[in-house]
Length: 426
Image (cartoon, rainbow, N blue to C red):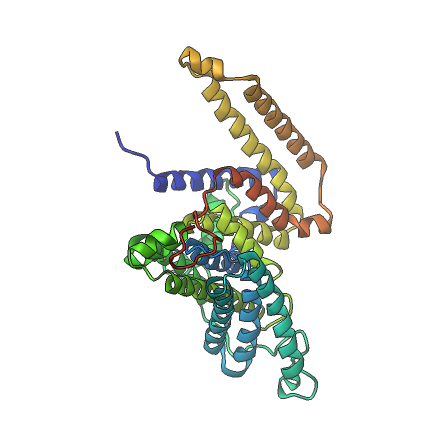
């Protein structure tokens, strides 16, 4: 009998998800649910969240809690805009990376060297980032400067002098647009798969490809190299790692600097999307990236799923506020599947002890789920369009809901956030 591994379960889950999205799209008539435009926007919106989440992953796997990702992203956006309008997109990329890494270095000095509480240090970084960038804008972008003559203001930089190239995936999105033709047929499942593939492969920014490649690279480095083993040991039991000759201080410094560089790279990507720095353009994505990392249980694969989920929710609400109401139907279908799976398990024959263990609580949960599904269907049938205020906060509400659901199975690194001092057993 062939053993079903996590990889196979992930593929099955993705197939079921696409099937459900196709069903919701067909029943609701909201083509934007699986359109190439929605998935292209989702990809662009998921990348900065995923990069911020990767930054958190590197730091927390080494035992340093990093809630300063937002501030490091802000530093990345400002310096990318400043360097990009003068010297082009490559300079923007380098400047944003370095700025984020410097933010990470500040966090490492405070937490690793001076033993400052990790949360306090992270909050300080989040306050310093916007403060420093506003000060620099008032100095370098004020009226009368060369930057102001090129369109800069106190809250924005001049446009980048050059853009990062875009590429299309061979066979799928080069030559005749056969995926676009299939998408326009609106045939159940076929057009949905075509729309998803086209959105993810047609005219993709080169930085998106780099960001996606960072996920398997991070997994390989952290789980399949000696350096990765030392880094994870510093996050699980730094005193045991110290006894084996690991330089825990150096490992933590490297991890947090890399963490800041990833967050800065996320800020660079936001500048590439808008073609310039704009104050406040991170819009809390550093915190959402942290939530995606927690949702992913401190692993790259789960992090990618979390970033994709938040990116999709954000992209859908930007493309069509009416399509957001389809989440009601999608949620109802999920609850129906949950009820069916639980009923199947409860009605299956078993030993008397197992049958007796099925308490009234199980039936109460099933009843509540069924009622919830009915309410969601009713909302889908009666609510044509949500107020714009509710549509705007959809990604943030989804963040909270996902964390509530995921909190039951989380297992953070044992020494995450613990103050480490060489020779002092905790």
